[in-house]
Image (cartoon, rainbow, N blue to C red; front, side, top):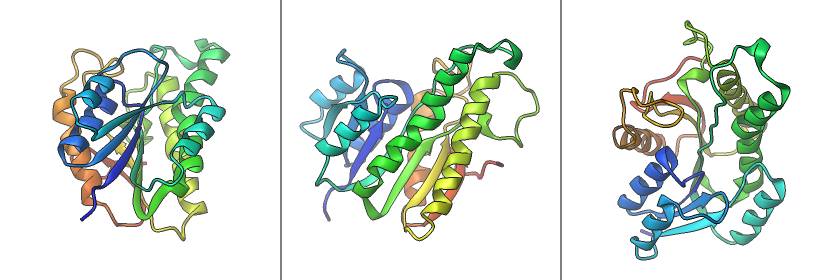
Amino acid sequence: MSTKTALIVGASRTLGLGLATEYAHRGWDVIGTVRGDGRTGLHDLAEASEGRVTVESLDMTQPAEIAALRDRLAGRTLDMLFVNAGITRGDVPIGDVPTEMFVEVMVTNALSPMRVIESLRSLVAPAGTIGVMSSRQGSLGFNTRGGQDVYRAGKSALNQLMRCYAVRYADAAHTLLLMCPGHVRTELGGPDAPLTVEQSVPGVADTIDRHSGEPGLRYLDHTGETVPW
């Protein structure tokens, strides 16, 4: 069997880097993207991978850079496209959120991942997987405590846009996944989160792989459980 290929957008650190590392260890070829020209953990992974991992530059908030990446990858076939994105600008009540902050979070967390998917979907194999890193905080059903208003709104918007995408391309055979990694010790999750990246990522990858070849959209967590919309 030929080696599978994954493109992981946003793989410079934490969950994205963890996912790139996990799939490289599982025998996949991994293309990971980073913003800018600085040295990252992905570069270290690539150097140690004997060609299994390659690094591409992408600021996905810039449509021209998405188009340039698509052109560079023309002719490649992806078994998985996974977009890992998420910023927060603090726990600010919505009435106090500056317009610029709201726009920045929405563009980064919701609009830009969908632009990547729309632009690169033609590179994904007919029975391949398109995944996005969502969050439990994007769930309306799980929101019983409030807080993190803009971050929650951005992830909820991402979920809704993925649902629109799934309907628009209902005839396609792609597996579509909104993945929740759990409460992980990252910049977003904080130092007291119960899960490390190393504890979360294998479950995320197992869940992705378990649903490979199953068309349609699912909203799942790192244990494989369905998350309420």
